[in-house]
Image (cartoon, rainbow, N blue to C red; front, side):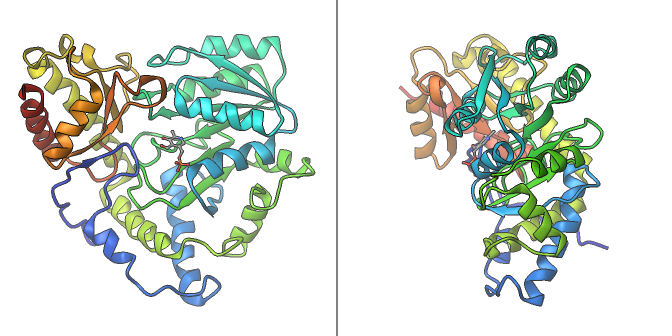
Length: 373
Ligand SMILES: Cc1ncc(COP(=O)(O)O)c(C=O)c1O
């Protein structure tokens, strides 16, 4: 039997990534660094290889690259798209994916929806009727806006209308919101260790469907560090392609045990209730604190609000960076606004190991900070 997770210490760190890393998981990183081809590390890697598919909900392998999550975004495009790709753009990270497609010299089209809104699967359908694409990229959870996209419906629309691969950034959703890689027919899914998995940054677990693997095989130049097939091959041999972030692997190993003990579906439910807690607090206290009426202060449309990050507009007359600074003075770390929303929003990351009691303490601090003259 796996031991139940130790009670998490109070959390005051609410960045939407990297997220808070518990003391226990930090301690796991103090184990001696070993050679990555040693028996000791191969055992650690074998546990990651066994545990990650359960979190990704796939029967396929989940290799682990060392880098930041953006490596996964680039790797997925280099390895599966020869020329034409459609990027669904609804915030800063989906903008980045389009920028990567362009930087790689691909014919990178974009389908834009306004920030804060969901991507309508019908629009995707129509775009795919107009032109053939090898892949469609989707950022499942737009960390910049606090929107979780209807990924299952988008993937269904892509598959119904075309043979384009569905390539997904699940960086700030995986481990905190349902991601059903196999059941939803997702071809590539990538994440980072530092978000809802709640390990430090440095590792990029990803999947590739059989279709994605076949497409990669037909692309001649996939780079070296970005070659999806190299990762799959070496993963099959029980290891990584180069020296991995060994200590972060120890931390991820510890986190996977914690996630298994909580249960992935229970973890999704906990995150959903954190999202609902934010809306309930705004409904109860937001108006008197000067926020826009009730949960209207949330920048994401109702129905697609993210379980891992809430993006809020501060009360009129109080700039978002000022509010974030006042909270920092009280010992609470929040995310500022991102990209085009930098000055007008702030973000509460409630991903990883955050509990409702932590949010309650944060709300008290926000109540004090907004009342400060
Ligand atoms: C949705 C999403 N995609 C990609 C990234 C990029 O991650 P990294 O900074 O690890 O490259 C982030 C980081 O915040 C993100 O939130």
